[in-house]
Image 1: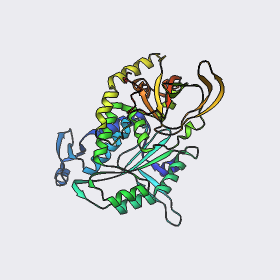
Image 2 (image 1 turned 90 degrees about the vertical axis):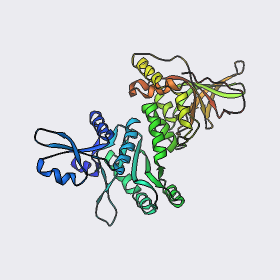
Image 3 (image 1 turned 30 degrees about the vertical axis):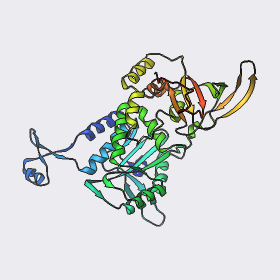
Length: 380
């Protein structure tokens, strides 16, 4: 156990401890309790009196810009429902390089769910400034391989996550060369503008925002757990558009779905989310599902990728074909046209409620704008 902890940590996995950490990170101040003889020493370092205790004085000091940035990012991952998160500011990963002594690499923010791991480095400035961070990006990029190996060693070789690497900044104007370098290293960039937007989305969608977030950063990448998912289905046409009718689990559909066709970092996208998804409606649906409710109606989606369908039998008179549909196994491959509240209501529940089948009516690469052939009122 101790050997495993040396690989990666300190890590929070208990939900009550994660909630306590979230409370601490929301506070704008750091707190410390000191004895009277140390007051002047601490006050000289910027601490101010907050509360007189029985034998000590509690002091407070505004958190640094770096810590505020880390906390905002950590809280984003927390709101998105990640169930393993880094603790405090001393989280580190063991770095083993051939020919070098083992060392610990500090990671600013770390999060994990069943299929993905998020690893982030943060850098902030008190004032808006142009700053070259090429060396930071290159160093971070050079450690991706060894950090990835340590993560897999920690969880076991059967865990093969999608690891997303982030460089998160505040008040730093990125040089074009650094943007290009980050892209070469496959490191995702989040500035304060995008972070603010993602926090708004997570506040609005709750845990469902994780699926939107992953759809953005893992677009078109394979989802290992959905590989070779084959479902009985009916294929036909409506208004000249090919459709498929089938059942699948909310758990599977959530992973490949997205609501808005706009990019998450589009500042005009947030009002669209608010129109399409009502937070109180999702809460009502969560309560309905946990009370034993179910939906006998279709979730309506549009597959953005060409579908593989194995024909079993055709009914020429009815104009339909019976067969097997290969469910897309890529992130962001199913745009939810209608039924987003029902589907994202499932995202608020525990896994047991996301296991039973739901009805899906799916179109294939249907033109969604400019043709005037399809009407959707975005009802829940």
